[in-house]
Length: 582
Image (cartoon, rainbow, N blue to C red):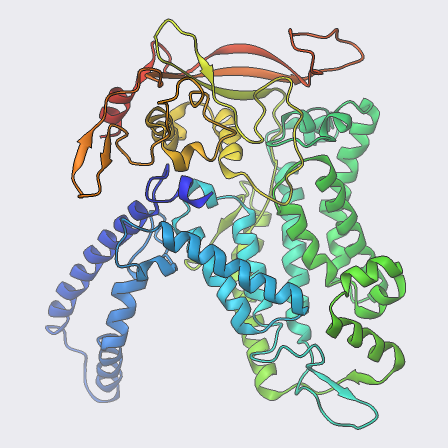
């Protein structure tokens, strides 16, 4: 999806974010150089104090420090955070699509290596971490969801769990029959506890933000949030409708259960008792599985299961997993050998950890403890922030979700026409509700970012809060291939044989082999006018509603027009949108 979202001809090109950050960096570098000139006039005292200031100035003025500031630290986004992205290495920012595809393919390769081998090391995880941070840095609204920093933070933790080089699954174990050391140290316990805390703050943050929100539906005396949640959630799946039509008493029970899982059960994750931790981990896993079955919430719930597994030790998993599940979970040859050796007592955990490993783990633990101070403060704050970070590198964040649940489902329906009097053709998305006869698909853990962002736009009010929509409408009128590919299809593609989809930014100009530009005639049957209508959607109840519509397919939704979303009067053309964006 990256080419259509942040690519060279995408809705919000990554190039613009990089260019803006570079301008910020150049301005800050210029101010520092002026400050260095003025600094020479100040008296740094004498003796040891002067030597200290001279050494500090020498280090800060070194070529390395200057390069670090100019090429990374000073290049910041609008929130004042540096952009850790490999795209700084691209020489031609007008041609970033190969970089976007290349980095994604490298990430898939590294993930496949770990999945196939059943093990990982620092360099594999560091590669994945840097690639994901690359996309987060330039992703704009498309990578602004809470599970993006959640994935980054968990990966950062994992860097300190695995060996530096070794891919040996016995790393940190010794063979009892030979007493020969296979690895110098076991998995650090401090990191395991840090991962459990990470899960604790995710769940407790999600629970507190509901209790402290302005939505009475989460609070005792009402407890009706789940009446509406399934019908109004971003991307329903095939089972969402059945969850929605459960009895009201069941929905009230769901709200109480949600509060227990998010506000009480997380404390079990931090208990010293092994049995209590296991209980807490199993509660969270079962809760996430239920959420996965009830809606397409991207990879959020799958990701949240991962730290819960850290509450279930090897002995518990090997003794309680069914044979079929155990063979799937431990399916690699090295993992099978690992299980057999542990079961037979051929190996045991090395009792002493390597000094360097212990030192690194302790420093990491202290770093995360410091960064989490602001997270804890936020959890106790009356106006709790959701999915926010308090450090510039976004190493540690606070999380939360669905503090407010809408009571009606609003959908934005985009239509275009060749004639202002119609007929108007509707654009259909891959998973976003539109066609009232279309059954929602199962896509989790995959994430269609444009569809999700359309739901956010419908919930957040006027188009001014979602400025990317202007560019999106323009791209639809231009029929840009990379953007059209994000949709289910182009409603104008079959209108005529000459209605081809072009990929150039200006669809009337195409590049010839000689490199010159020639103008082609405006498409007679292409879209000239575009608008966004707002509809209210409800699940079609097969028991209480007669079949609506003139199609033989079963109906899934009922929709009712609410009014015009954009423009409030008239229609938009390509020329008006281009002028507006300028």
